[in-house]
Image (tube, rainbow, N blue to C red; front, side, top):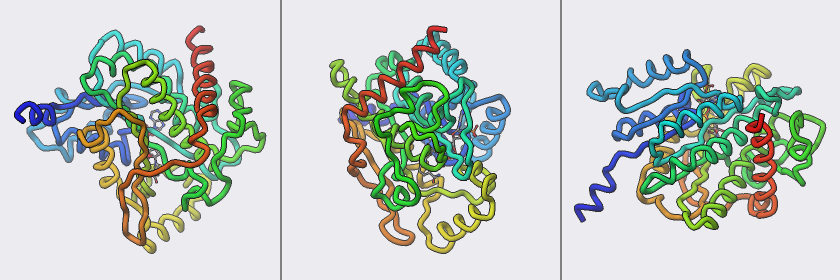
Length: 340
Ligand SMILES: NC(=O)c1ccc[n+]([C@@H]2O[C@H](COP(=O)([O-])OP(=O)(O)OC[C@H]3O[C@@H](n4cnc5c(N)ncnc54)[C@H](OP(=O)(O)O)[C@@H]3O)[C@@H](O)[C@H]2O)c1
């Protein structure tokens, strides 16, 4: 009994992407409050300073951020940055208990694709490619942990049957004909009409397929550990930052009206704080420590009512061949870069 209590209370060493704002920031805050040690990669020094400032304002005075948190530089949309980040972490050799792949972006409303440093469509590069790169690179550090775990922030919109997934073009990767072309593809399925909203939904479908394929590979290797994908619900902050900041620049009025209706009229949104608490739990609670791939969703049950429950994912996300091919083709892109 004493042993199990001490295991529960042992601080975890957690690397979380996308913790400079929104859900990730709130998750990191709650992790720190529970005395876990947190690594928060930030895309530049300005973000490092701002994140330290935001955390310092709300953390207990006796919590020394210099001891419990690290803020290395990492731009997820740049393979060069990812490569040097992974090299430094591996050289240092410290274990990682939870790898939380939370960063994500969308720029719905844009008719033109945006590109990562190496010329990959930006949503794909940030939301999927970077996270497969980090996972593969940091796996040796996870394997040093006594109870490793990976948590992936996906979204209900990966599922064409979900309320959000039904609006606009549905997520679908087809035969991955775009990805097969390599650098410069606009849509993963090979469609040459760019659609930013679908690109985001597709990237979230990639998150689920990636999680499932990752767990299959871990199991096959004989060293499985928990891989959890989850959906936080619709989170629209009141300030000008947050997840819809890029979309707002393409359609400001539309986004203001959408936010007002969803958040203030219908109450179908979740707060970043509540979503952050859920993410912190997924990354740290022993309840989730089962060697399996699972998907949890913070689902809307009615106006103002959210329910967090384990759920099935979309039909397409159960396609094992698709998951395998996505992994292999993504690997090819990374290998091409690593060999330069
Ligand atoms: N908000 C929602 O309604 C909603 C719904 C379902 C799923 N999600 C998912 O939840 C996750 C978190 O979203 P959020 O609502 O918390 O949005 P957010 O406030 O915009 O946070 C996104 C985070 O990702 C980081 N990021 C994006 N591109 C990056 C890059 N190239 N390099 C380094 N960091 C980068 C951002 O860093 P910077 O501060 O440097 O930009 C920020 O920390 C995402 O995966 C999103 O897809 C959100």
